[in-house]
Length: 438
Ligand SMILES: [Zn+2]
Ligand SMILES: [Zn+2]
Image (cartoon, rainbow, N blue to C red; front, side, top):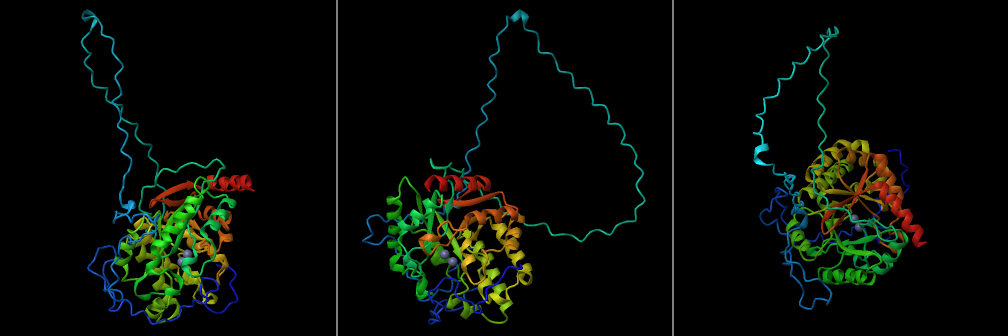
C-alpha cells in the first residue's frame, strides 16, 4: 500500500491523452427513470429503458462486410453450457476370459465365509487431559467464499516456437483513443512471445452513452470485420481473437445481452468505468470513499449479471483522486465484493496498464490480488494496449505478482470458456518464444 503515488493531483482520465474527460455530455438522457433495482441475474422485466428504446439490435446488417460473421443468433453463451466431457465409461473390467474347466474340476464356488470380525481396536490410551483452563472459543472467522467451480477447457499446447499465452485486452482505433492497425498489435504480440491476442474494443452503447471512447452502434460490424481481417492476415502465425470490453452500467443489461449474442465472441470483458460522465453524474455524491464503495458494489453486480467472463481492471477507481487512495479504507467493501464475485465463478483481470495511469500500479494492486487468490478467483492478464507497442507489456512482472499473491495458474478465454495454464509454463513459454522470435 505504500506504493508511490503519482504527483498528479487530478483524477486524470485513466485513458491516456484523449481529454475524453467525461465530458459531461448531456447526461445522455439515459437511464431515464431510475433503473429499477431489480435482481441482477434475473432476466428481469425490461429495464428502465435506457434512453429512447435501445435501438433494437439488428442482427446482421444487410450489407454485412463480407467477412463479418453471420451474427450467431442469440446462441447461449458457451459458458453456460457445462459440457463437461462425458465421464469415461468405465468399461467393465473385461473379465479375463476364464478358461473353462472341465466340469468335473469345477468346484462349487466356495461359500465365502464372512470375514472375521476385525479385532476391536485397542482401547485408546487414556491421556489425561491437561488441566487447561477452558479457552474462550475463538471468534468465528467467516469462511472465505471460494470461487464457484467453473469448468475450464483443456489447455491446448504451445506452438512450434513455444508460445502459449494470450494478451486478452487491447483496442483498435474504433475506440477513438487507440492508435495503430490491428495487424501492428499482432506483430508486436509475436515479438512478445505470445500465442494469441484478443481485441476488446469498448462496446457500442445506445443513447449516446460516453460516445468519445467507443465505436458507434453502426460500426459494430466494421469492428468484427477488422478483427477478422487481422486474424486472416496472421493465420498460422498468431491467433487473433474477437472480444469486447463491455460497459457495465445498471439498466443496460438487456441491451448488452443482445449485443453479446451478435457475434461469435471468444471473450467478454466487463468494465465499470467510473470516468464516464454518465456514471459520475449518477453516482458521484457524498464522499470520495462513498463513491469508491459504490464502484466496488458495481463490480460485484456486474459479475452477478452473468453477462461477463471476466472483470476488467478491478480497482480502476483508485485513479479517482489517486492522491487519497488508500486500500485499507475500502478493504472491507472490496472483500465483500470479492466474496460475491467468487460466488459467481467469473474471472478477474490483472491489467498491466495501471502502471501507466495516475496511480502507478497494476489493477488490481497487490493486496487485492492476494484477497482474490484467497478466494480462488481465476485471473486473466491484459495489457489494455491502446497502441501496438504495449501488447504483452509487463507480463513477466504480472505473472510474478500473481505467484507472490498465491496463484499457481493464470487463465485466458476461448469461445467464452476459460482455459487455465500453469504460471510456470507461461513464464517458460514467454522466454522461449521471445528468444525464438528475437
Ligand atoms: Zn476499461
Ligand atoms: Zn480497455
